[in-house]
Image (tube, rainbow, N blue to C red):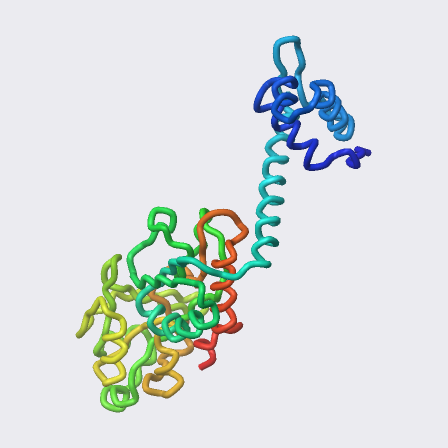
Length: 310
């Protein structure tokens, strides 16, 4: 069994430095140590791991295959250790400075903007820049600290917090249903007035699932718009039937300005499930500012989020 008692951050850093410099003496000079001390530290590391880490000759040293494998693991371990130290250190500080937050327009207006004043008052040293856009944002290129993204899967290049799986509802106003009747199946929708959203990917398609039955509908709408809020208002006013996510119409459902239809079907405007995430670029450990803002909004949203309590 390997004796790991001699392995510590100092011995790992010296080993990585020897690989980088290719020389015990150069590392010794940089660290103000004797070459024999550096060599002895690496030998102890090899003994603890029961593995030769370096090839040695009179001119230089180089990592063995095992040495390269351990070096990669050590670099990752030290990186995580440094991030953890940074995270712990930040806990003694207060959030502050410029913080750039991006969210889709409708979600931002309905579920981010109402809490911004409280967030700013609670953390007065934060300078908030809230950008609402439905365009795709590359947080690294855009300089965004945090973005709320609604997507089929989480971007593997980003880290963050899962909020919830998105649900969608086919809805209409009581006045519309009284005038035009209640559709029972997706086929019935061909005889109704439909409202449809047109976004960056074109006209929204509607998908319906009931057991093994899967149907897709390309609406022939009476009203088309790239503004979701306008379509919600039109539906509330009796203009037709619309399909929108829960967070978009939760208030309308709660007050019965809109009524869910065909509830024995699962409705969606995408062939794949979408979820909501709060994402940030960089390492897996968020900055103090990012962690603070995420925790603030997760607390406000609740679990499950308040917009699903309808």
